[in-house]
Image (cartoon, rainbow, N blue to C red):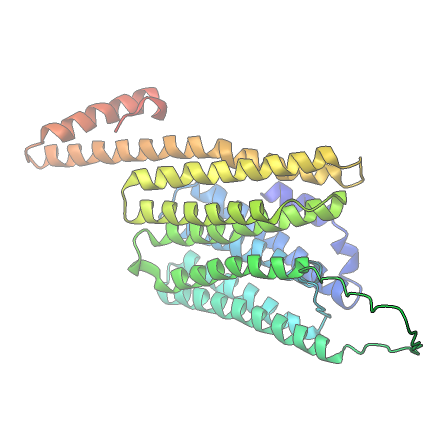
Length: 374
């Protein structure tokens, strides 16, 4: 992460556009600030060694997902939202307010984690939620002001009346693609709202940190990727839009699979979570197959290589499911071994099922998580 942040900060055009004005300068500030948080997250993650349950791990997560990811969202929203929703979103200096609030919230959260002060950590989380709500409010206000100021030019009108000809039938207006994106992005907004609720609920929820990460990544980010990657593929390759029924089916299946994963992990049984994870992989691979078919139908273009990265990301998600499952088995095996050891040290009787689990735990620690059967 530190190397990637340094490479982006050195070669990105934002180093030059930050000296400009208007939207280009605002986007450059968002990008450069995000790269700084990416480097901070890399340093903190290297210090924790990917060990969860520590304050440094929490600081690394917030620096990455709030500092880097949301800063990228703030910087690209004035460009992406008008293209997706077909609405005007002119630049206003008002956009700096939620940006400053976001980075201040991340700084407070990271400082609270480093100092291990619970009040400061909670304050950082509340400020982050306020910053996200401020950004949504600013976008809505700017979009409405831009729509009100838009003036349509009316030229001279030539009216001719001819007899003996039937009036032409007006063609049936087609539903614009902007309305489809508006309805689909409502799902993303819903997942983001659930992310804020999970962040404010905290320890009231079972596995609060895991739920917070997966509601945001598996719910909001994955849904947004399914919507926007298809849109950008159509726009970059200039191909025909795929059938809307298939897109809606994939979104519905992804939503059901995400709910199954969240419910299976937090409340059980684990079979529900496993089925949901398998369905997520199936939906993502189906989406990748649709993108590959559009690439084959399109003529060679300048930005065709971008779609290959979309397909590679889908394959990475499918491959990453199996190491995660094996790592979960290994953690359960170590937990069973510790429980048996504690009961043995206290002189308490160990039941047969615990001994059976301990035997498999020792076998897993000796031969790796692939041989674990707990």
